[in-house]
Length: 332
Image (cartoon, rainbow, N blue to C red; front, side, top):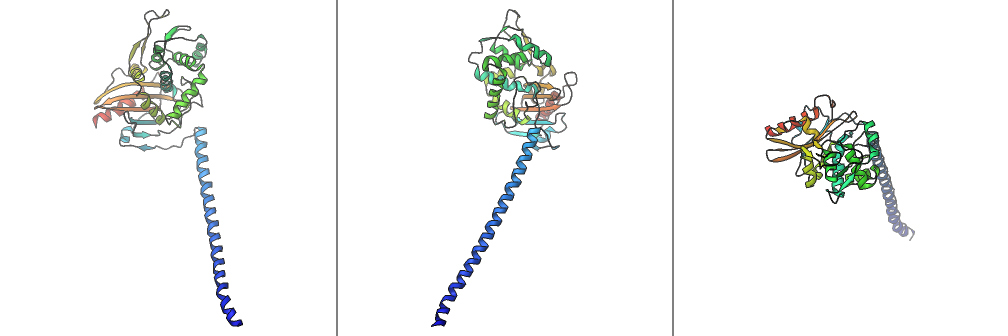
């Protein structure tokens, strides 16, 4: 009887022992998986934290990121950051350091004019150029279109004055008329940048004057230009070489604006086509910058270059880069 009971209970004890070992092994595996998961999280946080540190400080690693079928056309340029884009589709065809943080200088005014166009109901309406903006602009050495303090100017003329001769007084007049002040207008610019996926861009002003918190990338400027050129009024302004503003009391014959790109590019012809228009930019910190549009062999291209050496007194290295790239495309 006793032996029978013992024989009956032994299997149950053996099964419990096996189950106990199985549970212990399962708990050990679970602990290992949790430790591995925590280590992976830690590594991920370190990587993200390091990337954020680089973005906050503006530090850039010395690398060249190249991609796209036409990246070889971007070799041997003066500009260290450059991106070539299909203007119709927005596809990146070639790039070098397109995501490296840069100071955009007057390329900023592409966004200023776009935001202006999207918030002005009547381009023939008029605004008075504020007198109190001039002193600071003179001290900063900002480029001007030539309007006088208190001059009554149409919004259309302000937009042309902002983009063609890069007039800072036009930008500030637009900012005050549309948003009340420049700070509020810069917030509108940042909202538009977020909408367009310009994740590496932040604006603090509407002119592009130097500010360490005012930055972008060649890639983000290209995104902006692809979008902006879909606006017919923007495209018209961007591709205009010479424009005469409406007559005013201060300028009875109207001010005549010449595109800053045209001043450095007497002949827009390139192999297989022509450069249709562009916006230049320069500050000592930004270097020579250019965002341009070209039509070559029936296809439109956008090229954005930043950081070229030189200044307004040297060779226009940013323009020479554009000619070189567009010639290579046309000759292919």
